[in-house]
Length: 362
Ligand code: NAD
Ligand code: GLY
Image (tube, rainbow, N blue to C red; front, top):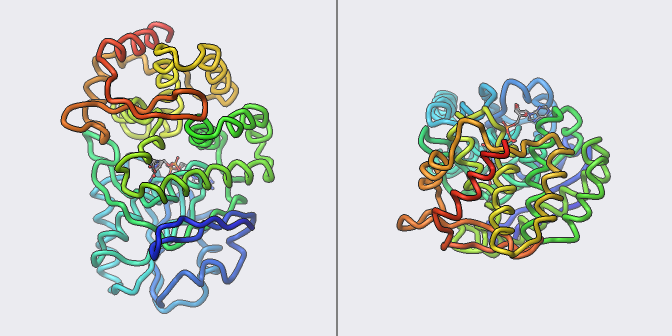
């Protein structure tokens, strides 16, 4: 097992990464401070891992299991409300611990519930998708979607521990694995060129779920994420680089209807657009864009924007992005591979050119 630390003073926490961690009878239990626990999972993940998590918690006086329907379309205020209904009926007090067992949807919604219930209760993340293991479980962003925008209602609320059992990835469908790998590649593109080259070389082993290679990719990703979060927890500046491709990606997710494109798929295509824009500014060679596109094709990730979304549709949706300040869109681009920057001078013409090229190549 490898342990990283998210350095946030008295709100800092460990990120445990290893195989079969759920079989360890002390790891999870030590972070549950009281005798009450709320386990939130979904109807796909619960049959696979709920019993293991319950065993790893040890005996508790009150355990409430909340099994949500599966899907991004359920990451809503209505679902959040059903969580509060159950914990109120079961009379959980402020010493309770919320444990999220699942992908980013379960993690984000459970974290937000933990942030709100009695103004904040203990919270532990057990991410079971690659995307959640390398991104959403670390860093304390929690949220639900609004029909007009992704993750628009939420809070920064850090977990007390993150337990990444990489053995859970063995049951993950290939499409979800690739979506998670898109976020792994993001870390290489924004801040670690050698990692990006390593990913290009090891993609076949990652797609084959070779555990040692997966573990290395997860550790390297989480350590970059932990470093950036420690520098800028509430995204006043540098943390925004973690959103490479997300402004375009969120537009695709919202425009297509939540759950149609996977988050990682939308981010993968969004990063392609961001690289195209970076290349059009002369910052990276077009061969780098081609290399990235090839990588997406090897991973079965989309390289074209949705056919029914034109530049106008993108611009309308992107104008609601959380990085818009006073009407000015801020975008993450790359100055070179491994060196992201935030720009606030992208013109409508520039964006339209990239989007129209992407639309005409579809
Ligand atoms: P997800 O939570 O929908 O999980 C993907 C699918 O995999 C679901 O059907 C789930 O039931 C299933 N699944 C989960 N674990 C499994 C396992 N071990 N075996 C088999 N099936 C399994 O999607 P995701 O990609 O994990 O997360 C996407 C969400 O995360 C989006 O809502 C996105 O906005 C959010 N996100 C948040 C942050 C953050 O910083 N908080 C960062 C990135 C993404
Ligand atoms: N996923 C982007 C962030 O955590 O800031």
